[in-house]
Length: 499
Ligand code: ADP
Image 1 (cartoon, rainbow, N blue to C red):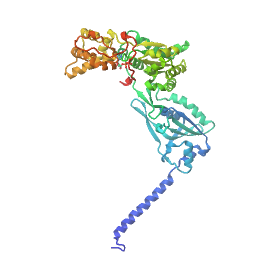
Image 2: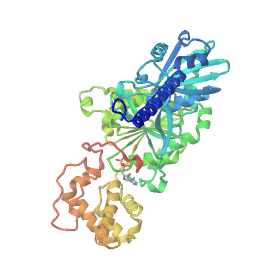
Image 3: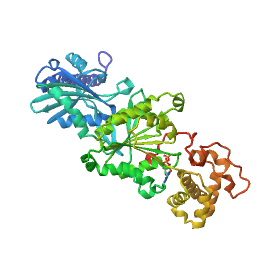
Image 4: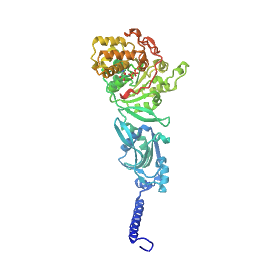
C-alpha cells in the first residue's frame, strides 16, 4: 500500500490516462488553430477585404432554386462552394455574416443542401446555404445562395453577391434571367403550383407524369376533339407559317359541360399530343397564382396553361349582384398581358359556363373558342362500354340494352359501370359477363346509389325505362333537363392528372 493508500499500479494507470488527456487537448488546440475562418477565405478569393466590396442582391421565386443554381454555375468559368460552421448561420444576411466573421464567429464548414424534385423520380441536390467562390474572366465573385425557408417567413430564393471587377456584380445579376430560362429544369415538364403551407405565397411545385392517351381513348361526338386539336395543336404545328403571315399564336380554349364528360380527359389527351410543351396546371384556389403561371409559360414556351374548374373563381353571387369578380378578371388580364406571338395556349375547363360567360364576353379576345363537352350520346356510351370493358366480350344486343338503360349518364359513369361489373364478377368468382353488367347497372341506377351517380356527374335516369319493377325513382335534384347546362353541379377540384 503506498503513502496515500493508493497502489503504485493505480498511480501508473492515472499517469497514463492523464498523459492521454493532455495529448488530446493539445491535438484539439492544434485543430482549432487550423480552422479556416470565412472572412480569410473570402479575402483570399476576392483579393481584397470583403467589407470593401459593395454587395448586390436579387430574389427569385421559391421553385426556382435548381434553376438559379444552374444559372450561377453556368456563368462562372470555375467555382468552388463552401459552407459555414456555426449555429444560426442561415438567419444572417451576407453583410451580417461578414461583420460577425470579423470576430471569428464563423468557420468554414459543410455546404447545406436541399433535395428538390426536378422530374418524376428525379431529384437535384441544391445548395440551400452556400458561398460560391467563382471566377469569370478577370472578375472574382462571392455569391451567397440561400433556399427559401417559409417557416421563418422567407419565401424566395435569395442571392447576395460580392463582385470584384468593373460592373461585374450588375453584369452577373442581369445575365441570370436568361441563364435561368436557358437552363430551366422545368422546360417540357408538367407542373402544378401549390400554395405555401406557411402563408400567402407560392409553395412547392408538384411535377406530374405526362399522360399517354391516344385519340381512341377519348370518346366525344364527331368533330369535337378535332376542333380543339386544331386550335391547340394545329397552331403549334404551323407556328412558323402563322408568324410569317403576321398571325398570333396565343390562344384560349374553353371546355365546358357537365362533370364527368371528359374535359380533363381531353386536356390530358392534348398533353400527350404536345410532348415538348411545358404545362402549368392551376386548379381551384391555385388559380391565384395565375401571374406566376403566365410568367413561367412565357419563359418556357411553347407552353400550355390549364385552368381547371375556373368557375370556382367566378362566384355566382358576385355576378347576380352585378359585381365583377376580381380574380377572374385578373386571370383574363394576365391572359391578355401575354404577348400575342407567345406560343402559349390557355385551356380553361368549367362545369358552369353560365358563370363565366358574362366576364368572357366583357373581355373578348382571350378565349378564341368555347367547346361543349356534352353527355355521351348512344353511340358514345356504346364506345365507352367497349373502351373500358374490352374483357366483357358483350354482344350487340347487350350493348344496346345497356346503352338504353344509361341514357343521360356521363362518360365517367360508364367507366365506373364497367369497373363494378368486373368487381361483381370477381366476387362471384365468375368471368365478367352480361349478367354482372346488368346487376351493376341496376345498382348504380337505383335510388340507393343516387349520391354515387351524382358524384359521377350523371343526370337522373328516366326511371320509366328501368326494366326491373319495384325500384324507387331517385329523388335528387340534378342539373337542368334535356342536356341543358346544369345549374347545380358541385364543383370539385380535379386531381386526376396522375392516374
Ligand atoms: P370532367 O373533367 O368533364 O369532369 P373527367 O375528364 O375528369 O371529367 O372524367 C373522369 C374520368 O372519366 C376520366 O379520367 C376518364 O377516365 C373518364 N372519361 C370521362 N370522359 C370521357 C370521355 N369523353 N372519353 C373517355 N373517357 C372519359
